[in-house]
Image 1 (cartoon, rainbow, N blue to C red):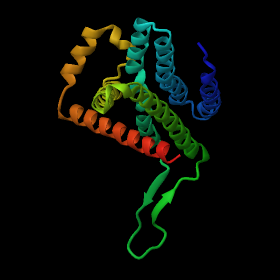
Image 2 (tube, rainbow, N blue to C red):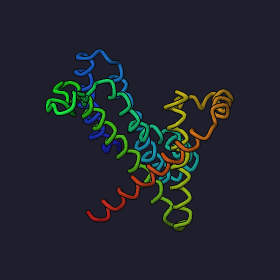
Image 3 (cartoon, rainbow, N blue to C red):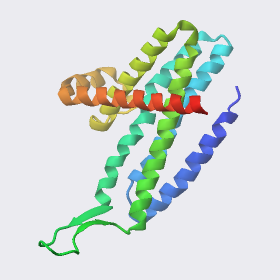
Length: 224
């Protein structure tokens, strides 16, 4: 198996890690160490699906299916990073000043804290990279079923997006990880106890977000 395709991803993660460590030593916020780990997790779906394709070429069906399931298990990690934007709210990049009527020194003001803006950019770059990895791997999976017809491709696309939407809710709000699948009874018990209108709405909206991003990705690829 040839894993040279990993080189640009590793370079990105290392470069991103250096920047995150710099911000960590400026703010002592462990979030920026976790972002490095999150970009690593976001890369795994691409790695797993490429390995699955290699096993397919070697006619090793069982290994192909195992790595396809690993792709499905870790695919939500790539889309999860967009939710890390919630952490920037504590940096007050924008604030408002109320003054009495007819005074002109009030209104909206923006922070000149360089580190605060750098945090926003770092989270944004990480979320963009992670989303790209996830959507690209999803596209590879959908394309691999081209011979099965557009209906099967559509079912795979929609079901993967819905499952990822549910998984992102589980990760963000219930604080479980992909490897918690190793304790399925505990995981299912917590999921069912947390089911309500918000959890279902969030999962469906996030699934719609994934489908929307996938559609934009396909349009861009088609144009280029």
